[in-house]
Image 1: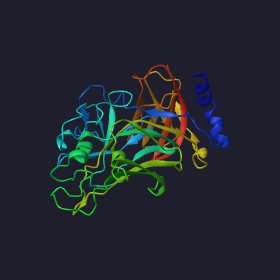
Image 2 (image 1 turned 60 degrees about the horizontal axis):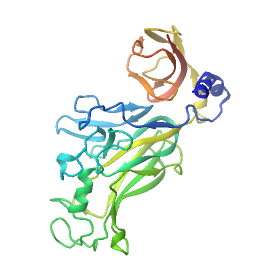
Image 3 (image 1 turned 30 degrees about the vertical axis):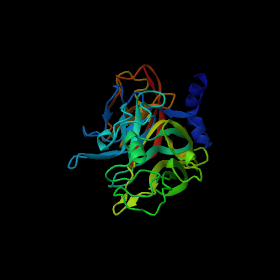
Image 4 (image 1 turned 60 degrees about the vertical axis):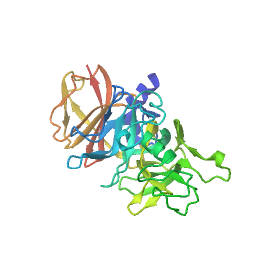
Amino acid sequence: MKKLYTSAKLMGITVALGFSSSLFGQVTVDFENLLTQVDTFWNGSDGNPSYVANNATFELVYDMNFASWDGFALSSMRDDTTAGWGNQYSCYSGSGHSSEAYAVFFPGFSGTRYIDFGGDVNFTGFYINNSTYTAVSMRDGDAYAKQFGSPNDANGQPDGTNGEDFLLLSIFSVDVLGNRLDSTGFYLADFRFPNSQDDYIVDQWTFVNLSGLQSGRKLEFTFTSSDVGQFGINTPTYFVMDDLTFNPILSVSEASISKLNLYPNPASTSFQIVGNEMDEIRIMDLSGKVVLHQTGILSDIAILQLKSGVYIVDAFENGQLKSRGKLIKE
């Protein structure tokens, strides 16, 4: 902890000199504190989509008109047997990797949903598993999707695959403008082996190593399946995620961010940003965990709920990091 404190204390010097370095070291998002009740889920239906965990924004959109969602929902559902869409929030192994809570991804149809890290990061990896809905559909088939390994589609007609089925998740490193920089892939199921005994559907938490990906601002996810129909992929396109790890970095452009002036500092109940017109702030503890995220008018920022200690305050304008400062909470 002393090393982290020293890094934060000297941050202003590091930024001024323009060094390219990690600010907080490796950060882990485990979703543990975002959903604490077992056998429940959150999909943004309460009108509060997209959430921030350890400075990473998980994009989530809920459509009130159709009662549907896409992006990254939160779940602690443990039903690893029930088939069908009604069980779309459960993990196939029955729980999260390190705790009960985890994220569930569904791409939807209304646009790309990213994990946005608020600045360039070096990706480390995350743990992945199938959702119960997807895994059971691939294992047994359903009214819309075929049984993997079968030469026939869901209607019982030959589909030309000869049973050589797969579900591939592609993972892209993306820059701030949405340009894809690099990619890797992970097979959630693969039935293309010469020996059918090697065919598999992922049924346990498995680490996806992203350290070879080019650093970027966002992660994007897409699916490819052998089971495709008139309206696209028939296989339910879900996966579950836990323990996402990454290393925040200061790129050359970020090294020139200005010093954020805060008043009063130290502060006990609230503070103001002096001389800067920003529309978003993120307050992080010295481990890199976001403890307060606020957008809109930032005239007076309440911090009474924060514990006494040292915090880092990042100020953004139109989604771009502009200023950074250190706040002492009394």
